[in-house]
Image: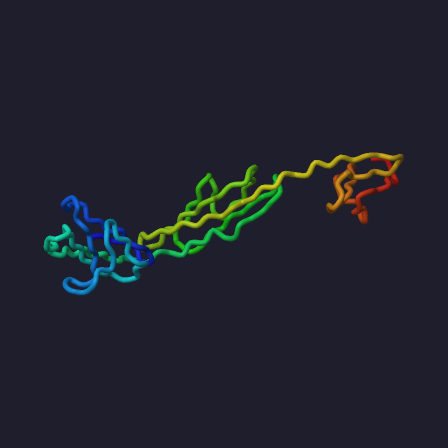
Amino acid sequence: NLTICGGNTAELALVDFAPGSVIYWYDVPSGGSSISSGTPYITPVLTASNSYWVESAIPGCPASPRTELTVTVSGTTPIVSGGVDQTICRGEEVVLAASGASTLIWNNGVTDNVGFYPNTTKFYAVSGTNGDGCFAVDTVLVTVNPLPVVTVTTNGATLTALMPNASHQWINCADNSPIPGANTQSYTATANG
């Protein structure tokens, strides 16, 4: 006999049978047609307790008496969500916030709803457990894109970023503030800096 959380399948196996036997599974104690053969048998997704019967037979001989196996469904499996996949540039903060269970634990040292700064692309898994003691897992892919390498050339007071087809914003080096309107590939400086 087996106990599972609702919303899962159960794996049932017959381990003690004569060599050469064929294993048959039923959803009735006698008569009826077999629902599967071989071992193990994987049940459909169960939301309520159910019984299954198994028998073995050597071809040409009578089948063994059916043995009942009961699958007890206790509790409901939570629907855990780690959120949507995220894509960032290296150095940007990521916050992963999960939902769907009373206890949520992330792998890779992540704390739920607390920012961190990943350096590489990675899957993060969150395990959620509810009050029934049932759990589920979800994963989130965080893709970390490298920062662009920008080369700047000068021609007198004109600066040109050698990165076409990109968004540009020139910065005042004195205070690291964006220069208003300086958002094209080239910028002509009006002061030293």
